[in-house]
Length: 306
Image (cartoon, rainbow, N blue to C red; front, side):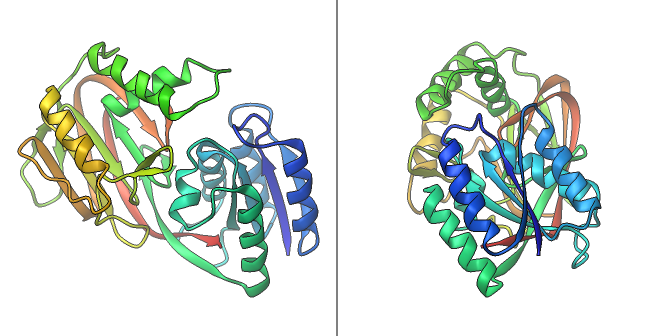
């Protein structure tokens, strides 16, 4: 088996020693190449080349941004849903949140995750997962327009500062009271339903959507890698509304509901139009500003080892 290990040395919890241990362990089971990324988009380019060159496995060691780049690189050269056309994906978490790694059942500790990955390779344990596709960008767990994308954009401006739950909370508060682009109206369209108005919208590919430290945040409890997309859209952001849904999101058995909430689980297609440009994020990475985004569920898009 030919494999390539893509390491983001700038990720929160990646170290040179951890990289060497991981590479040595993987090299005992596969024919391995190792690449350290040194610019934005590097992981995407490496994964795309690996797919074109017929590699069997690409392992991402970094945070959710690294995983997202690798996924987009893998699927840029292959045909989703066709067995054997796209290299398998392996993940060893190295970021601050590691939402995707946790969602597929990997331990947060890189050493434990490495052990699980090696065991899965030895026993050929894999699973097929569905992904989301939005405006040409693949996403593994979440994409959104509005408040959450404003938060992501604010955090992105603090490059060089280690991300943490407290940093995201401060960014959320600042973006709530001072939205950088205001609160343009959003129109949400789901096939077979009447259009609905909103001011912020999250589209999930799995649940939980993210984590507050070790605590999972639930928006669409009926959403998973084996279902369609989940929609969580609010048509108002008054403080009582926000507090209600934050409290519900922190519950172990969350079932989000409220009169300001439009929530759907397991939908194949969602289109959102904005009256003016709004921020757009994919897997916690700010893509830019959009006035229209179509979100599509793609079943059985990728094979994950683990």
